[in-house]
Image (tube, rainbow, N blue to C red; front, side, top):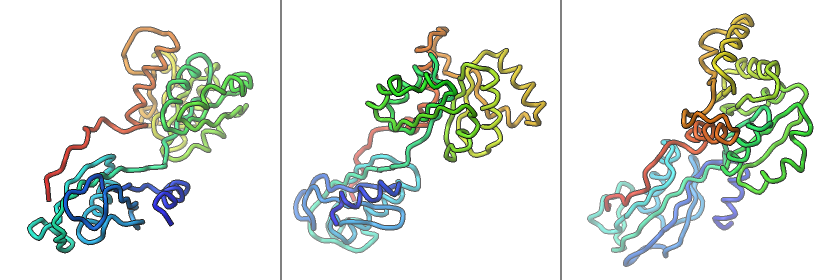
Length: 276
């Protein structure tokens, strides 16, 4: 089986992996530039030449999977004098190895309410490689024609027209994020209660003013929720980038708030590692 066939199978199985590529070869090496292998936490597929070269690349790849890396470039020497933790290779050449993490597990964001702000936020988030759930009790808000533009972007869209919204909250995967912005404060509170009953969700955002949030807190405390539960809620939503209340401005500020949770924190471009 070719490496790309393994990649397709592992992606379908949602197995995180590292794609290892011999980016360049100078002098003698066991494989030519362009050779590839896949490394998961438990297995490897394909070969870039075996020996210390491949064992070192495999160890580096598994470190990236464990530590949450994304992209690394290493220069490895294939000489008797080069450091060799996994055996000596004396081909005499030098190779550059590119390691790229491929994680088919996409973060999930559920927007409860696809009105003016929800629709604007959906348009922004749909350009990201995420699972985007759009939930509304009003059928016209999630009509096929209205949703159609979102399917052209990277996000995998799931649409729910649900008169009883707490069922969708219960279906969210562990670690999923949600933003509550329905047309009805009673629905907002209902969804929020369902979200707080789960202890395994990520970001829980609620659109609204400080006054709305104070009222909600009183009602939630009466329902038996604790201050620690309430601390899990972000209200109002959005980074303080502007005073504008335009739907587009709120959407951009909220997307910026969610971004580190969806694509990871800022990382530097890969630097060439010290030659080995």
